[in-house]
Image (tube, rainbow, N blue to C red; front, side, top):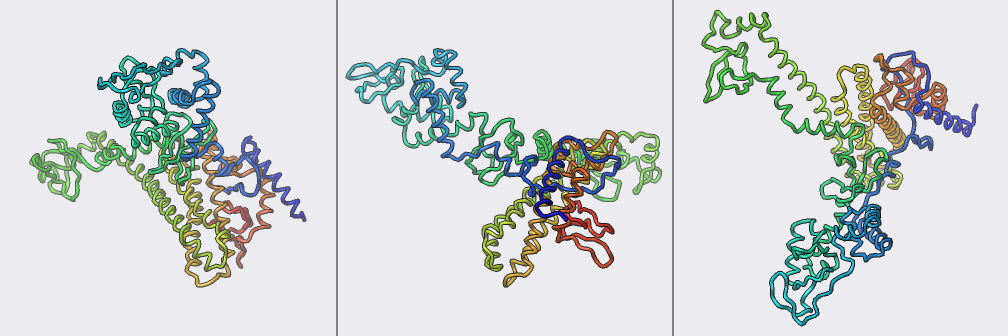
Length: 588
């Protein structure tokens, strides 16, 4: 019998070979073409492999920035440009704003043609002082003022303080364009720096200018974006080309950095755009009208038949009376044509193929509408479930966790497994929601992929429902208990196990969908080995070794008196032979 150390070593080696198989495409025999087969799952928590990064590792490709972080970066950029180009910090900030806070571009343009850059940006190499006189005429109000009441940019054009304040206030209230403020003289293009704003502008205008200055660092920089959540003031600095675009802001909102819609793996941005447009467009209204109504033969307005009689009267002012079946005038109908209940003229014309095209178009519209409704309802239902799970998570963190800690006499630090379960439910609801958009746009002629996809989606949904029920229903019993429960530790093991299994399944499901279900072969079949790999399975050797380890650790698999195995984690029990459970990785 292997020792625990040897078993751990076997598990690590087999997991490593399993990961290699997953990426190399090599595996076990692929003779069987049965899609509904056993699947195994890689336990991402059981090894240190980087081949399957966790949700938290993906955060390495971006940084969430608060206001203090943005200000610090601005200062660092300004200092860097100022030192490299040997110019003032005010001039450096003007250059950075002009070149969208790109330090490398500032340096390249400056050293390529300094004179041109100065001319374009409005930086004078040699500032011009104010006229040396007791009184100077303001260039805006044309009043005479003492020199100490006059101010000018580097160009030396004099304007009184009052006119400067009015000019600055007007520019700042016009929007972020004030960051590229120039001298008020129409013939001059000298830049007005932040130092003059701080010295002359009114307090309210200074605050607005500072806000524009701060926001320009994010909005002008192609590597940074604001979090799109309402009221959120965090920004994200993203490493472009680093893989997944999913971002988790500090405000707890998850979004796609590429399209700024909510996070939508495994669906690409193009599909999300089409789906959102379809949900909001009038196309589905038209499909419904086409499928459930007919146009009035006279005024062409669509009419929905809401009673059994075939005698239709259009609404005023039309009031045209016609037959619903053949759209002919009702005055032409009588016993000869079928009268009140039927229309023999329509039946005869239909047999001759007169209405084939119209009926075919209406039938296609009806099928299209039913298909869209099927996917949209499930998409919206999972969205609602996710919102409810978010509310439950918030309630758990704010109230229930402390209450449960008191009832079960356990520190809150020992109850974090409950928060992790709810976080996983929220994430899985999001993924499951977008799988329905994925399924809607999956080409109908690829029947094998569609069948495989629906199987994977069904398994994911059933696994998530078990986790959700455990966290929502079963936990309630412990919250309502009057004292510590003896079986609370068993509940901890069960909920933590369901969380891990569900997380692994969904991570591998996302991976399979992002790969376009490439494991389905060209003959419309999916091999056992390839299918197992797509969800994390490996070679037969790896399966066998991991099966032993799982069996040795299993407390959830039980054999009843009749010799049948069952599993409390999943619905794949009650089998006559001991096999590895495809949902919980236990042997039963």
